[in-house]
Image (cartoon, rainbow, N blue to C red; front, side):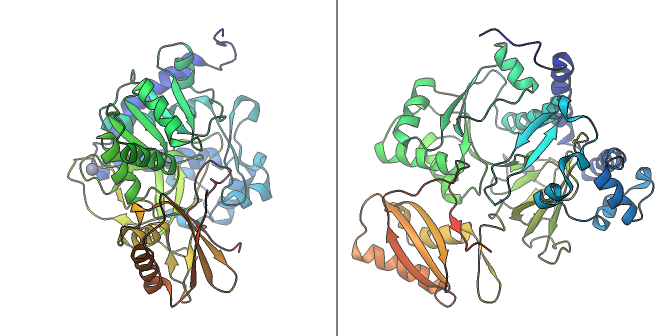
Length: 442
Ligand SMILES: [Zn+2]
């Protein structure tokens, strides 16, 4: 196929932006928190100044009494309302754009939580998105010439950013895509045929693949690392991936709107570093106030790079807690717990306390139920019932079944009536991801 160079806008500018972004991100992760805060302030003022020209943000800033973007402080964000897909839909996309959408790249989100989203960014902004992925790859010893398999959605088109241009030109290896819902044996065939140094994909699909490798004793040449993305990444997924592929398993918190937001520290493996040079990340309690360090809240993100369609105080619906202090790896980037699930994919106890995916997997893990449970999903039903759907490798012994029931009922019995059902298959959501917890539609 001929390379459609003409169809790519400003290719030279975007490639040089990509290289500049990669160099900048490489350096900035080692800056101290004060220096990072200074850069964040400057970038935030630039975003606010651009946003002020749009109908939506112009009105929001006027209402908040913010007249001069050049004196804007990160703390002033709290005077602005939260943004989500419904707000964007209500005002219309044009109310958020600072340039003509004809020159921008459209990004659609899956809508796994209800409203599908549509966002725009420039190819230059797309370069920054790619560079943040490379920051993670480089932290795990991966290079730009490394081949890659991505287990995710097959028909997701390549966005016309600089990375896809370089891949089309043959200057970077192509990404082999494998659908997240193909049988693990098929995905394994591709991995064994290509032996990619970079294995990346939806956590649920990586987990199923790793599980298959361990169950069959298949031999796989270890990649440099396994990158698990795009949904709550469970402890079990990381543990299985490391055992199956003999490589570090990396939790990458990435959203369609922002790209890579946070990622596992290569030294302190159980926690995530936040990309504080690219975002202002707030952790908010249910009442909208800042959650203290150590307490879980919703991640609300302001991009410091998106100016074509600024996203300011955007609700991700994902939950995590800040971890205070500096990291022993030497990076100045802040620390976050791994993402504990989505606010929309949780159950509430009678007293309002949240039940999250990691909590449920821990109930299975503490009685070793994963020995016989391949996949599970918990669906809430009317009348405070939880239906545990179990896709099993083999029927459990009566003792195993009893242990699981006891573990779950002890933890949840006061709030829910629990039922177990054995099923042949648990389908992925249309987004290609497995949703572990399915609450009643609110
Ligand atoms: Zn670190």
